[in-house]
Amino acid sequence: MEFVERKRLLFLGLPWTFTKYTVSEDLLTINAGLLRTTENDCFMYKIQDVTLSATILERIFGLGTLTCFTGDTTNPELVMLHIKHARDIKNFILQASEEARRKRRTINTLDIGSEDVDNLN
Image 1 (tube, rainbow, N blue to C red):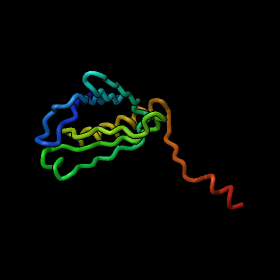
Image 2: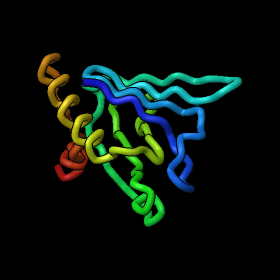
Image 3: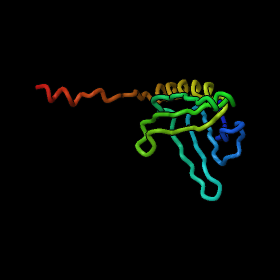
């Protein structure tokens, strides 16, 4: 399964921008720009969490904004602005990222402040 979505103008939710988001089972790709283009990729196994937010205008026009928190050092947050089907895409990313970690036998480790333990002794 693959989602291809365009960043939309908030007004009327029309796709009159030059940013395209492609979400597949293995990769999240953001292509932006017209004269100078930028392509940013993130492997699914690096995505740790996804949040969905929607302003009142986004909700009126059936849009949402996804923020993907990654383990990538160059882009720790990838934002997909004003997209349709945001909830479906969020659920797909969460499921695909978990499956990609399972396939690679990669686990998420979070820093829970272990350095503070040394200061207690």
